[in-house]
Image (tube, rainbow, N blue to C red):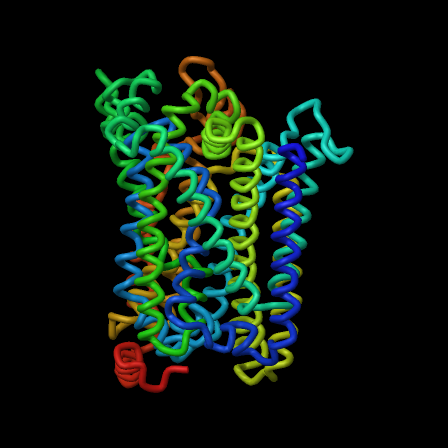
Length: 554
């Protein structure tokens, strides 16, 4: 069996297994608790494994290893930002779990008098952040699967050329995520995540072990070889190649580069606890203590995984080489598949390379499927529970109605994501993941933190903070070098979304978090004082007791 055929076979096997899980979950899903939160029957360790899976997306598995392979030490800084983010989550997870029921909107609306505008704002933020994150994952899925199946421009697989294969992959991924969510709800999504996390950790461990074995299990030898092969020498092992670069003779550019790195770090660290699909998973366990245990397990798994990305990234730099990685994909996203083929061929010849590449490809595909399912579930839950159930139905819907709306909402959100991903499949959308983190940090985190800790906070503050943070992050990105005005000084090619020659950027940073996060907090505070609604001290006290002790939580 050839490499692409083996990869396709493993894809198919994973799809069949997860569809069987979905059928089982559908048979055991009977009400809102089952659909939204899996009946809260998952243990802390089970939910922790799924939580880690929600977080370890294809961008983590392939993207970070690729950044390390091309930029050395600076790529590892990305890993550190993702990991440190969980320390904030550990501080808030128990309180968020106790304060809410199914969604972020539950947490925000618990203590305010005017719940409808808060629920609407929470639903808008949840869907917006999720769709941006979702779009990046699905566009990446199309490009990645084409590469893993060996479909290059001018070549065909199963009668499809590269462009058709990308579109077909996006449609298949979208259809599967709709099936997982609409029929299986949280139960199916969680078990898909658990299986995917097991595959991801096993794949990364096997690959990291084989890489280290090539260097006699001497990390120093691996790092030295990577530095030599990078063409950057010792600079490859020091900060400054990618983030916070010093530009000799240009103080302004140097300062902007350093501020941009700080901005990225803020978004990564603060955005995690505001990601809707991460927040939704806090409610899949029976109580706050189990939620805290979930995060502890997630921290352990994520920490081990990101340590392994060091071996993958530096191993790819040493064994594959920068020129080969860039020739396949300038952003480095194929560094891990290329590394899998290289170490597989070293161990078992061409057949070994095909087998290991197929396995890593299937793991990457499973990763994408699991993450997009969690994003669609978070969006459909918020639309059905926050908007339909609490706003349109005034908090008195029948459970069967709300679940039916959630299933229909998953179809709408999934279909929208498919259409947008197909339209945008030829665009450079790598910035969307960072933008999703920035929006979550700017809009959701201020509302969550101030709801839990500020007695004076009210519904006007929640609404102003959410919309202010969302709009600020979006506007700043539109007028940033990410969208227009960034040009490669050597080739003259555009590094922005728009082609060279179109330049309307006004904001110098590529990552808006440094400015948009303070704007989100400022809007929340200003909205609180400008609103006519008086804070309800009794509701705040009740929320504090519930968040800290779990008394009265569901």
